Length: 473
Image (cartoon, rainbow, N blue to C red; front, side, top):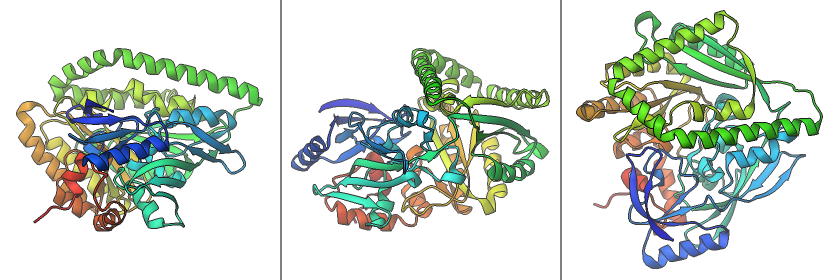
């Protein structure tokens, strides 16, 4: 264990923490015992991809589980994979993709860990079909503050199971997870890109996409106004058959992994340059954001007319390449920035999206892009999911606009509350305690369960103290 200055994915969030890096369950127990003896709180962390203070624990302890990362077993008959908490998305795919299995509901960062994805209940591009990451979890083992090892599934202590998923590591340390994988016809996908001129055309087209596609992600132009408000480009994807022997398929997948690793190394090398370029462009924010969105829409429309917008790609390239090509959230948001991912119910989708885009256009610092995904409802105690759509905003306020941007963010969150939506806590840095309680009315259930499992509040984070921890009178 050593003291470190720890930074969340968005660089404006940091804290000084004592970091422990256990590699097995026994060492996790040692960390728990140490914290109890020293009167310190403990915050479990996976790959450190959470955007805000969910993974910070100022002047206290962080348990970094990334080195606790063995794959324990895979049953090809059932498609069930058992792993330790630090196993990453790319570790899982390297183990099973050539066998025509895939893990659903995974994000676009290849080194996010299983326990981190579980604690944040992250989402992928197949949310309306497969749900969020928690829906892929069959069972888990949880080490509690009292040293008890709980074996949980949906039928056994289901209330705890549904609270650990999306529970931000506040109920204990996940030391083992069994996942349900999906069998696929091949590791390859057919991608179509459809430009759409307004919000009505977008929502109509999405009915067809949901019925006929396996994945979808929507780029939404936050600068379009009037009868073009809500114009977008929909990237819809389906699994395709690919002939070949198992050995040939294994070689193809190995080549995809090699290219992915090369892209990852290259992106890390050029990250400082990319950050500088993005920061410079955002000094001329209104011009650069408007120009980029106009260019991307018309470029996509031209490719569609020329019948060059569709292609077949490997799943690895489709799911992870965007994290190399598109500037990272930390680069886009800058030193004072923040993100918001919000969901709105399908029943209010048009009104809510139009209202939010109107707020964005009235703000002094518009997001360079807005990414939209489709979701289904789930039953986890603190979940951001809805049967509807999520919108992801990456905001880069300039110093002179901080107060106006604070008012804009408050209006945006109030709009989400008004339409019955949610805010994704793994990306939050801006919610107030009152807003959290109105967004997540089941927080009382969560706190009651925490009092039962962790009466001394061993497991905490900066976010817990900001939003959830009961205040004394």
